Image 1 (cartoon, rainbow, N blue to C red):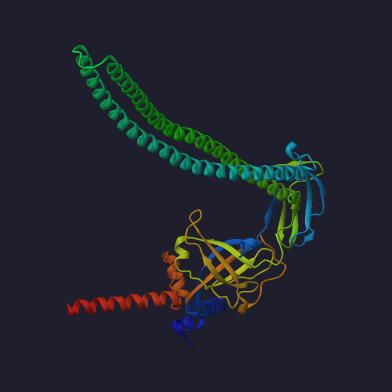
Image 2: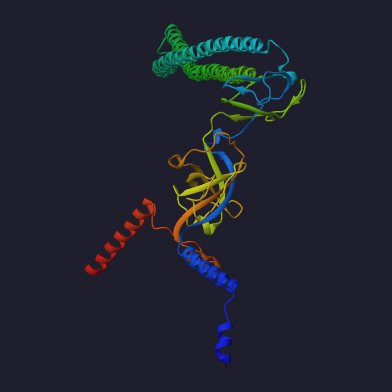
Length: 454
């Protein structure tokens, strides 16, 4: 019997079972990989930060001492809850200026004394003003009186000048008559008795001339004296008025200086009253005493030194994170963010937020316009629609966040990362940007219409 060796050899060749299993595995692997490549992937970028408060007033703050003093007594313990206005500690004075316990009373007494002195000074200034007014009135009256005397002197000078001229005329006539009488007596035409009678009349005329001349010169002197008196009265009264005005100005200067001193003393009094309230350091708001920065009794502190740190009660929590300029350019206010807090277990699939476990939702509240150290600060608050944050987390807890962007296929995300391309912009543009774009399109259309009309 003969065998066909060729067919018999092929019948003996078979595929090993392991190779079949590998082929099936590879087939399923490529199929699953192909399916995964077409699954949706949510683009995102990662940010790191910490938990803080949205309101700056709710963040941990240090309470400072307004004045320098020595610690005398503590009223709180670390970790103790306090209400607004509760006393934290008491300080005693260390400046020798304020050692006197009756310091306020003494300042008040000084103020009262200065105010009484100011009242007397005001009365003196009023009296001086009345005196100046009286002197001005007296000046006017005296000047009018002196002017009347000058006028009377002028009139008397005129009257005496007329009498003097008449006396001169009578003297000339009497002299001529006496000379003629002498000649007639020498010619024996007149008797000696008649000559002596004429001589007597001549002497009477001469005496009247001298009297008229004296009266005239006296009247002129009286007029000059009246002018001098007029000028002296004005100078005398101006001297008195100037002296009174000088006294008034000195009084007013002292009064203003006293008012300034009283104002300064009132300021010192008010400052001391306020300073007394600073001996007790109180809580500025409800919260918890975190740490005492100054310890012991008798320790001295300076103005502005930190005493304790207080954590406000019920702060409005927010996460403070930082993003690069490339990432922040595609982030907008109210965008969704997923957060993972330190100390809270989580299983994160950043591209599949639906599968992620242990993360919490947040929304972008604000984005800084200025970078800090090359990165931009982002504040995100709780997204109440996706659930609340744990109550146990505290301010300062580290956090990690993922900003959720556009959903793309897995293969596209792999291709983008291999080529180092930035993530895609989302189609849901904020309303403000849409309005800006709409305005821009409208203005562009209007400009185009204007150009067409031209």
